[in-house]
Length: 242
Image (tube, rainbow, N blue to C red; front, top):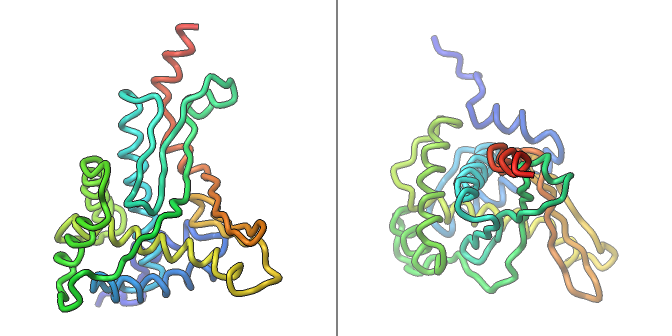
């Protein structure tokens, strides 16, 4: 008889990666589950699964962006006006240690909505198609490539089979919004709180700071992202030329 208590791949991923802020990430996962159901009629198994999905899609996005290093010395990907990420290239000797490419993440302070356009629609794929059409206005080809790679990664890493790549980016962006709101909300709701931050599965730190009544969101990429964006072949070639 199969052991029904055996942890899923998603639960293993969560335990291995969410060492810091475990409680907060579970809370974010619960919030994101509700948003996913409300906005694209998608149900995930648990808060842990939701965060594991987010982290796995994040890796696929960075892996796809890293493929562009041979073509572009600097690159910025705008993900549906929710998040910008990419890399810059420097000649700094310290940066040489990470393949001469420095990853970055930036918040997009743009008015956006995840609410379904067709409120009578209940099919996840159709709702996601509508979401993509309404929100992905630039760099649609590379975002589609990211979604396709993420679909493969979800299967291989978490054993989660998805029937379409269409809901990958809506799902990712909705979970990301839950993360951003989690760090911002205490600053909005509590007068005596001016800073708040968490670590997201070892991938990056995200924080919010209130300055003169305005709230700013910042990111600091972690070791995994810096490792994914590393390009030894390009860095080594540059070193040999010098």
